[in-house]
Length: 82
Image (cartoon, rainbow, N blue to C red; front, top):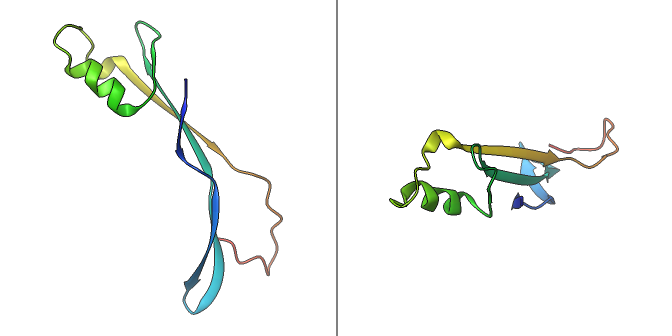
């Protein structure tokens, strides 16, 4: 089960006196226990498992994979996207 860490967005900003569009892609994260295959719903959920004295989960047992989804954007010399 992956979770979205950042939604895709476009925002106008002024950089060096020029108004540009800043693009932030969608970021999906999967946090998984390498030995058991259990997937966590958040980084905090994995941290709770590590901190739980009733489990033998260690920090090195946790894998964090990040998937960045970038949409197709028409680019040109007048696009002004950063």
